[in-house]
Length: 595
Image (cartoon, rainbow, N blue to C red):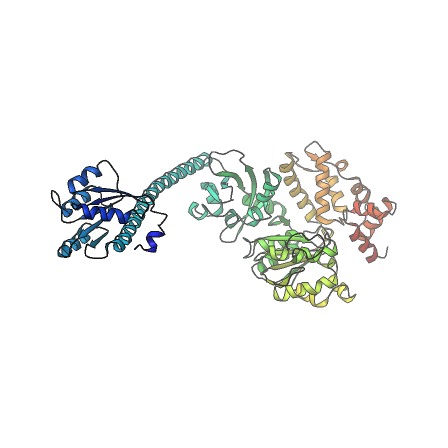
């Protein structure tokens, strides 16, 4: 009789070598006949010495040993085997009178099993053999994996030592320079931070090493839409970028940043960040100008200083904020500064211009869509609300959202829950909403062009940015700030503007606000070659509209628009280009002033 276990031979123990040791020929032949039902190789020995002799020339996986034998009995054979091999599988055959001896061997010499000759040997033998061989296989696997683990541990230790040596070497290379240096790997985790960098950021290397760059530097540099990802997309680094580092305590440090990508590196380092602390420079600039720096903004205007203080106060809350102001006044800069100073600074910041997206696609841009939701929806798309989860979403030109979509927006503002287009599942998010507009939303509410309930949900905290023409004292300050920025960007050494240009800039009404001023300075840089920007270096429209005389210069927005229309022979597209504003904005202003 054979057990199913013997018939269904364990695939882990096929073709093993078994030695049967017994002085009685009848017993040996019986055991061999029983074991012939298995796939194993069977050999025999007539006593202990014969078994040792055969063992010396053949590696056995299992020995079946009779206790009572001449020349060398089974117990002595077991002892000799165990001196050389502590793991060889052994089954002892014993008569009724030697059970105590078998128990002693089981305890002292770790034999696999013992079988009484008076029992049903075939059934017991096959069970014990397969059980012993399986234990033998498991013991070998354990030994093998133990050795592999020891080898792996040694290799890992060597890698750790090599990594520490590489880190120390890399750090020593940059210790002598004045800039802070941070090295990132391909996963944008910090692999090295110099002593100077630690000092600038008031952080220890242990707090920074192996951490995600976004957690240490902030999202404006290392977030999903930060400077590093821009470098990845453009496949090149950047130089002399004026930005801010976010410390672990939440304070902002103005720095000049350079990012370099290493195409070939002997270590894991893929990116090098060099940054210079600009706090002292900004302090001196503030003393000279009477202005203050706030993130990427600068102003000496009292209204702007109040706005900066308001932003600082409300940034840590989760309240919805509505930023109002004309085009080019810096609404997105304010929005980004709110995010960077908030508890969400390490999380994503996404911006969407509602006026730049066709109305029929806004729903999908906001909330995403499911595959097959409409023609062309070949796959599921994640919307901006979902992407900005736990972060901030900036909705620019919020007044351009159609009324039917405002209903869906209202629910998100109230409950932070929505459905993708074509979807059934409700998605819960945690998003801080910052909205902006250059239109009079309350007037739109009165004219039933904007929902009143949406307006109140947006206008929890209101920030109104003054146009540049109402803060003329900022124009020279901004001009010098742009000169410093463009010098680094264009590798120039422009020193200043002439008094004539100074007056020209003050006489102009700047319908395009700060953006238009920057564009004018950039134009002057492009056409000039010296160290001083003169009147002839500035756009012709600026000279025509502002430089002739006080009587000829437009002192208000309506006059500026009239001058631009006359210069463009009343072609509104060209007039809008002269003013540095969009055609849609120009149409609204024409209607506003009844031109």
